[in-house]
Amino acid sequence: MSATVPVNLPGRAYDIIIGPGVLDSAGERIAAMGGRKHICILTDANVAKLHLQTLQTALTATGLTSDALILPAGESTKCWAELERSVEWLLSHKVERDDVVVAFGGGVIGDLAGFACAVLRRGVRFVQIPTSLLAQVDSSVGGKTGINSPSGKNLIGAFHQPSLVIADTALLGTLTPRDFLAGYGEVVKYGLLGDADFFDWLEAEGPKLAAGDMAARVRAVERSCQMKADIVERDETEQGDRALLNLGHTFCHALEAATGYSDRLLHGEGVAIGCALAFELSAKLGLCSQEDPSRVRAHLRDMGMKVDISDIPGALPDADGLLALMGQDKKVKDGKLRFILARGIGEAFITSDVPRDAVHAVLRDALRA
Ligand SMILES: NC(=O)c1ccc[n+]([C@@H]2O[C@H](COP(=O)([O-])OP(=O)(O)OC[C@H]3O[C@@H](n4cnc5c(N)ncnc54)[C@H](O)[C@@H]3O)[C@@H](O)[C@H]2O)c1
Ligand SMILES: O=C(O)C(=O)C[C@@H](O)[C@H](O)[C@H](O)COP(=O)(O)O
Ligand SMILES: [Zn+2]
Image 1 (spheres, rainbow, N blue to C red):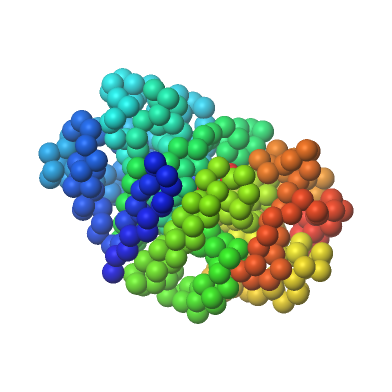
Image 2: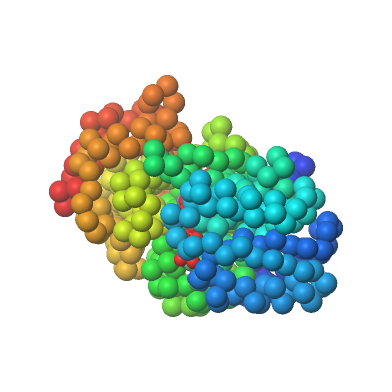
């Protein structure tokens, strides 16, 4: 029940190893990469408590020693202060360019550690060992790394590909239901952006997947990684097609900024709400039928996820305020927003041809609901 997805980037190719128990092979796989025998691990407090010992035992079994920096859990860790702490800690361990650093955690640790490795000595190798569903299906793959700014999400960062990804699906068993479902938001995104059959399958198997069915989890991680790898191979640095992976994110990032990158809204929850809004906007513009957003929302609702802006606790800015936050989106070109919209489920495309009034109206309706 395991799978390997290659990411074929010229000069920077790597494998994504997926399956229950693959963490046990981390020592062998990392030792095979060469470099010195001491491994620095960046992780967070939740993951350290549950799984660090297993990782360190796997490393020790092949003669590797390790030290870990345990950072606070949560989105607010993707900040300058924790970046500085991480880089200085790695420097204090005299990490060299050919050493291997391990990012062991969810997307927060992966993004922060990846960025620390991108800037440390202008580039140190790192291995992603994603422990959340979100990190296994999305953030550990493709080399986007970075931190947040009060001005906007992920505004400080770099492209820096990992040298290997080890996604042990058994680790997903200790996620809280909320964190698991947040990751599921990105899984649904893949079906919506480019694979209608996968979305059909999620409608049928999603509940089983959430309940812990391992074969379903492996299949969802593998399909998501395969779709991401295909897109990243075509367009590593988002000059074009890679922006498809941003379906729902223009809305999501504005909502995350509006909620102060806090526990009020997790990234994957924002992606689910953002995908529903992107489909509402597509329907409003006559690009797809009204049945499509209804179907998207019905599936998210069936899974017990946040679907509407009103599912976010606490006050939010009005439609103008959210539009202003969207102005910091990295897809903005010549001052104009670009969106990922859809002609149907599995048929997303990138466009800058979206009247501001239509976006305003969708936001206004969503805030009123
Ligand atoms: N670089 C990319 O391409 C990319 C893609 C998608 C998302 N992201 C980023 O990823 C971040 C979200 O990632 P996330 O949802 O993994 O958040 P996260 O890293 O905060 O993890 C969510 C929570 O789950 C806990 N956790 C992780 N693994 C666990 C396990 N096995 N058992 C128990 N608890 C565990 C963490 O401690 C945390 O409390 C956001 O910052 C988002 O911007 C990046
Ligand atoms: O890998 C990508 O490309 C993505 O867009 C994946 C997204 O799920 C992810 O949240 C990413 O970090 C967003 O990128 P950004 O460039 O909009 O910050
Ligand atoms: Zn995302």
